[in-house]
Length: 224
Image 1 (cartoon, rainbow, N blue to C red):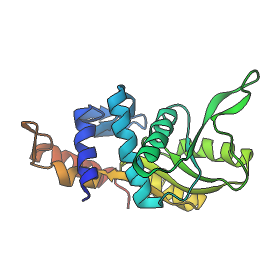
Image 2: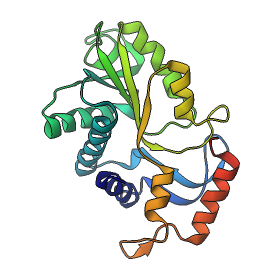
Image 3: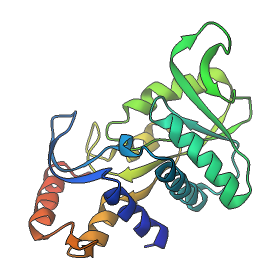
């Protein structure tokens, strides 16, 4: 596993973005882990987060694209932080774009924030985590309505590796439905492999009992 992925796993745990215990998800599933990207709240955290996304985008899609699109609302700071990181790490300027939940009818009018989309733009969509694909379901028509663009791929921070609407993961379903690649900085398999019975900052994050609970969760809800 690449060193930046290991660092990112530590970063998620230290920032209390990735938590372990007993959680009820929006879907009603009882999960032994929970991710909340809204817990990244400081400038230092956002700077590091942007760097991890930038490295994952570089690894998965290269830098031959024009726009980072972050769906409202959580995707907005992700797109901004990552565009800055790509500039700093690779010297590549990409534009950021996000949608508004409501169309603005005065001043900077329209449904988009940041850069407008233009015909021929190559776009990477950036999100925190995808469990059902609903966000892309809402976002894809908005992007298509603005211009004739090419979606180079979707990048999320964590692949939960659980079933979406069917038996496959949400990322696999998005890939099949919309025809563009999907990727994550890390997967839950990476997280478990890295943290299981390994001491981090004086404690074992994933011990035998938690590992058993995670295994049981994937036995029930894991993507096939």
